[in-house]
Image (cartoon, rainbow, N blue to C red; front, side, top):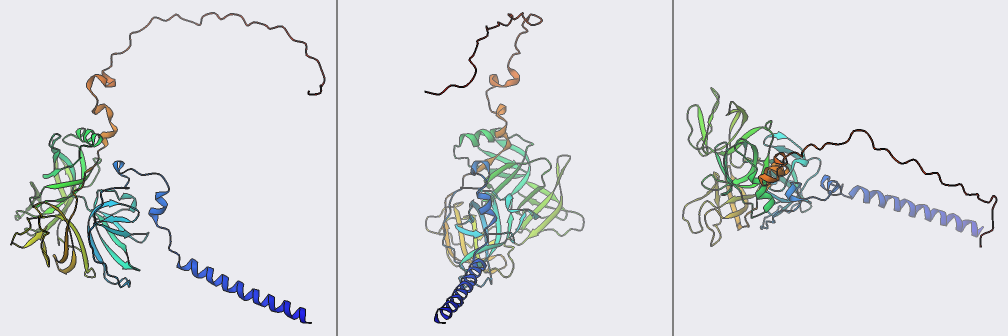
Length: 400
């Protein structure tokens, strides 16, 4: 009687323990984070930043305040260069992402697969559990279009009237690929502008002729029927609203008979973040030297709250971190000088070796081999030699 009672008690105890264990396992599964798309992608193949597959890059580290409430309310607006992956690294911030992140490229939907080191991106990240998670992200090329002029020695080019300088840092492969580019080739340039409008390229990709032609920059002279950006006069459609002088312009369209014909011309706020954004991280080039008493304005954005670091020179590379204080205004709590980026040159010319070899080595210039008189038919072959048969004993024999 006692033994049976004891067995029942043991069974009951085991059932209770099993139930508790099951509940613990279910709770662990519910709280475990889902794997990100980049984690899956990183297992597929090793990556090389020279090939544009997005691993590596130049690190930038800046003191960026993060909303630590962890409630997902508010957000951080970020504009800068992708310098690495794992998370997306921009301005020293590690930006998490998943399938819910809305990704665009120059205003058109795209996927996370389109991201590359050296691209300029603008995004909004929400804070949760002390981490920044991207809600939106847009790839923003400075200009995409045919090369109007190129100077291989000075490493400069003009695209749609926009002056561009690359920094290949003596990389022999990148320099060789850059030398294959010619006027008329279509390229997409990622980069930020200095105060005089010069684009410092962080990435150059040779594009197809079907690529969408576009540019973004500051409106200069504005007329009744046109607006000037850099050295390009952009025609406005009849009745279209003209951007204001100093406003940021985005224009996109096609090349028709060698002329840029836009179907979209928009004047935009230099900080197009929504009203929920509180913190801002902005990569730029210093529009003036430290100690200048004039207002600090970057691409139409007014910067207050702190001055440029001592020793900062005109066109030094900086990251501004602070609070969004109004449309086109940042109350900065830090401005950090950072290293200048090296241009990633992904010109397809690097896949055309004949274009960079010396002329005598080109296959098409090798003299054809002279015709050699060859005898007709097959020469007689000796008759097959018949080997004498060998009488082999039958049966099996024990092995020694």
